[in-house]
Each structure stands twice: as structure tokens, then as C-alpha cells.
Length: 560
Image 1 (cartoon, rainbow, N blue to C red):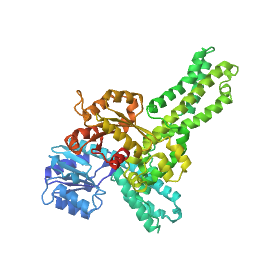
Image 2 (cartoon, rainbow, N blue to C red):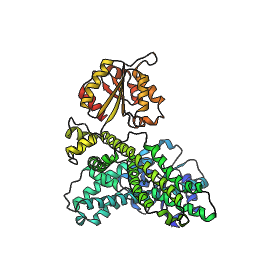
Image 3 (tube, helix red, strand yellow):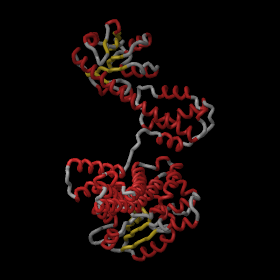
């Protein structure tokens, strides 16, 4: 049991006696109090003088309303003199609302007046218990953050030959100084702390290496302990079904043919359904053509903006890798007749083995079909993230002027492909855009002009919403553009129609990319935008301004 030295500050002698009785008659979450170690002050100034002379005081129990120096002002003085860091402060007051929020956050809590020695003891014990739990949580959280910063520094040292120059003692001292175990460090502060520690460490270690903010962030968040693991576990799925089948055969002397087939095949087909439901509503791309270049794109984008790879993109990349590995493994598994070795009872059941192998190979074929959808969605999401990044968009507008930021153009710009490869890859860089307007002349002009400047863009024009809806229903459209002046007997404006269309198709998987990436646009004049500002903000539609200007339309369609 630890004895704690405490100062009780209140201008009421009766309150001091009640608190003393409570302290001496109870133990509090591992702490106890002795009469010789309880100090008293009748005002804030007296309390400050006592604390200045006695540095062994570990707890302050203070009233808010006191002469000369009230409780708020007393804590502010303690903060200014750094005496507050090792002292647990508790306010006692009849009105908690009068406490200054800036000082309250430096306390472990408040005990409400009036109280007797029993209720005070219960309240104090609860505050100390909650404080201890918060402290344990804070220490665990800071321990993870310290490990993250250490791992980030190691990553920097691995990338650049500076490890032998690092002053390790100074690094540990900096960690201990900034992570004092008292205050929780939030996610916004961890970046600033990391920058500061690296700057000070490089300075004392005489390291002249200058790292950009993006490089520091990439190291910091690459070292984060909060990693998400996505996997289809396809091989493990087959292993589990074999183990289940063995158990089933061990339990029964005879088992029906279709039950064996179902036991071995159904789980892997369920995985096929999971992948299909996730990606089949997106436009497929040629897997063998695009897949070899995805890592090049990611590497390029991450150099400019470390945050390009989100959880959804990681999940898709893992699916792609899992399916590649599974396809190679299951092919060899079937060719080598491995199932007959795994389940000896099947050794002479040639018909059964062939049927199961056919179904395994069929599952592999289905997975490989899904790869075209997966790679298409990886590319789509990657480019969406890139164009949503202020830094990457700025780079492209500066270094790829008048060049559409497609996969083929970016790779050619990076010199990852030659012109022959570019021509092949460019065939994959197409998108479908549907435009709805009552103005036929405008539609013709729009299509002729913007298909020329937006290469590999197919523009489909409609003057009737029924045809527009039918076509979209049977095609995976990438973007839709609606003229604000589209008015019918049912819809007053194109904006009203667009809201109706999106609401009606809220659960339509074929339009998932439109909803996920906000790929709908409103053709509108500046006056109409001002008039419909709130509705447009709610809808979150992009604006293509009338009258049309080629560069404005191009930039809106590409970068918005």
C-alpha cells in the first residue's frame, strides 16, 4: 500500500475536517493517507506557497472559490511553473460549470459539494480508479507509438545509409522526453512529434539528409502497427475441406457420392461468389495487359503522396495475388493427382477424382475471369485516388500538360513502356460517358469536340430519359452528364431528374462506380448554379459550366 502526501485547500474548516476524516478512514485504489502527510491551506496563495516548499506533495484537493487565488488560478500557476505534471489534482465545487475548461483538463476530475466523509471517500476512490485505467491505456498507446516511430526510423536507415551515424542514446532520450506517460498523443500530434524527433536527432547526429514531408509520412505510416490483413485463403480453404472430408469418412463406413463432392467443392465456390459479388459490377480490363504495370503506378504515386494506398486498394491487391497463387497451385495439385494421396480412400475412385478435379479447375477458371474485373477496379480506384490527391493532380497538370492522365500515358511519361507497348495498353484506357440533353445540336457538337480531346472516351448522347436509362442499365457507364435545361412534363429541370435517377438506382450494382466515385455531372450556367447551390451541394454533383470551353470541360471530366 503506497502512502500519498496530499494538500487540501479550502477556506472552510468544516470541509477540511470532513475530507481529513475520509482520507484517514479509507484506502483508495492502492493508496492510503497518514495524518502527518496531510497539509492544509485556507486559500489559493497559501496552497501555492506550501507546494513550492514541499516537492513531495503528490495530490492536490482544491476548492474552486477561495480568497486571494481561486482553484482555477492556482492550477494555472502550477502549470506555468511545471509543478502540475507530477501532481494529481481534484476540484471540489458546488457548481462544476464555473470551472475553466483549460484548467479542468489538467485535473483527474471533480467531486460535487455537498458531501460527507462517506460519499467523498467513494467519489475519490472512483476518480483514482478511473485515472489509473486511463494511465494504463495511455502508456500502452504511447508504447505502440514509440515502437512505430522506432520502426519508421529503422525504415529510413534501411533506405538511406545513415544507420551508423544515428545517436541512439539521444533518440531514446527524445522518445522519453516527448512521451512522458501523462498526456495522450493523438494521431495529428504524432506526425508533428515524429518530424521534430527526426529533425533534432539528425542535427545532433550530424546527418545532412533532408527528407520531404511525404517521405517522413510514408516511413511513419508504413511502420504503423495497425495493419489490416485481407486474404481469400483459397489454399487453406481446400485444406480445410479435405480435413472435413477425412473426418466425415472416419465417422461413416458408407457415404453418398454427392455428399463427398459437395463437401470438397462447395466452400471454394462460395469464395468465387464472394469475389464476383464484390467486383463484377465494374468494367473489366485485360488482366495480362494491365497487371504487370500496377506496381509501377503505385510506386510512382506513393513517391508523391504516401496515402494513395487505402484499405480498399490493399484488399483488391491481396485478392489479385491470392488468385494468382491459387491458380498456379491448384493446377499442379490436379495434374499430380494430389487428392488421391491426401485422401487414400479415393485412390481407386477415378470417376470421383476426375469430377472433383474438373470442379476445382472450373473454380480456378472462374477466379481468373474475376481477375479482369479486379484489375479494372484496381486501376479505376488507383486513378481516382491519384486524381483526388492535390499533390498528384498538381504534378500531372504541371508535367503532363494537355495529356490525359490514363495508365498508358502515365507509364509512357515515366518511361516504363515504349511507344509500341503504349499503343497496346492505350486500347485498355477507354471509358463510357452518357450525356442527356434536349438540345440535339448541342449533343452532336459536344460529342464531336470532346471525343477528339478526350481520347479513348466514348460519348453516348441521348435526348430521351427512357433511352438514357435503358442504355445505362445494360452498359457499365463510367460517367453521366445531365443538362440542367433538361425539362419534361414530369421533371422541371435536369437536376430534378438526376436526383430521381440516382434515388431509383441506389441499389443498382451496375452503377456502383458512379456512386462510389461521384461520377455524375451537371451542365449548368453560373446563374443556375447560384440558384440551385444547396441542391447541388446535397447531390454532390460536379459542374460543367455553360457556355462550354474545351479546357474547362476536359479538366472537369478528368480532375473533378
